[in-house]
Length: 356
Image (tube, rainbow, N blue to C red; front, side, top):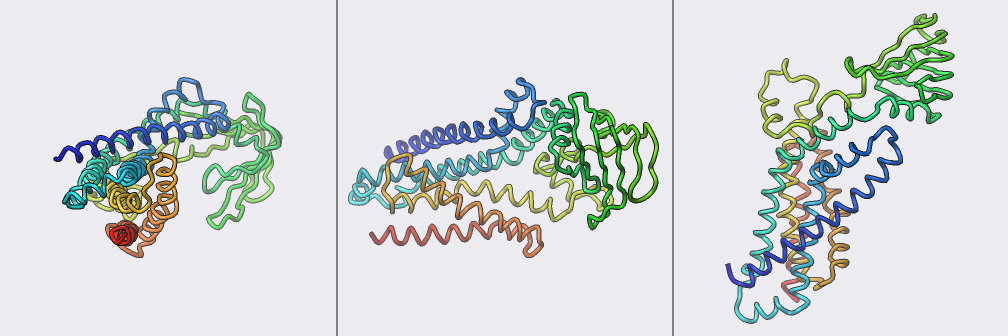
């Protein structure tokens, strides 16, 4: 590798690391405000412990954006300082100039693939373990004291007039719903004690005097009504499983697969590879954009990268995922559709940059 290539590669790494730290700091600050304002049952230790976990969970967002910012900033500075023009005038082939950016993008794609395959699922599971250490009763009380009906699962809607710090609810109404949302049963209780049975993964309502308004009779005093905790508190989801586990799940017989849908698992596996390739994709896109704009300031590079990611990359990812989950296209093909679009945009910008 030539001297200028090593220097550019090191500059790319430095700019990416700086951008990564800044993005994580901003995202964690925003997340911290939201968490602290919405969950009183979160202890200080639990909150501090979530910070490194947060880095793993957001890797698929912050790493590709950091790569794009680094490429636009590094090559934009070199173009603004006429280094690119000098190298080209000295007979250096454009591919030699682009090589550090491409190697950098490929390296970051490989690192992100490892993170998404194994690191992020472990971070998701760690986040769930920490979630279980929070005061679920306090969180539940906050939900029920909002004054609005709260849907605890697909079939149970709960409303209370008030709920005190001990979990005693006043003026509680429970609706058991049909699949179409029609109420099958309505139970009204003057008072009800609400708590979480962690061992059985249940939310328990111990009702005082209560009566049934709609549906099967359930009148009396001191009855219990139970509902399973939401799935996010109990079961693992696709994001919590490594790619090897997902692929092993697909190889199981249908009667041993559980509640996941095969199309969802296939899409999750394909999306991880697609997301990792986003780093190399952003390097390919950032090179012509940087040469076209010739910006050397970090704010300008970040703004360009943010706009490209917000209006081009992430919408294309969402559309590709929707096409895969809707079975319009096979997941292995659908998830790459947005990448092809962005590569076309990179080629168009590169062609125009090459003519100027």
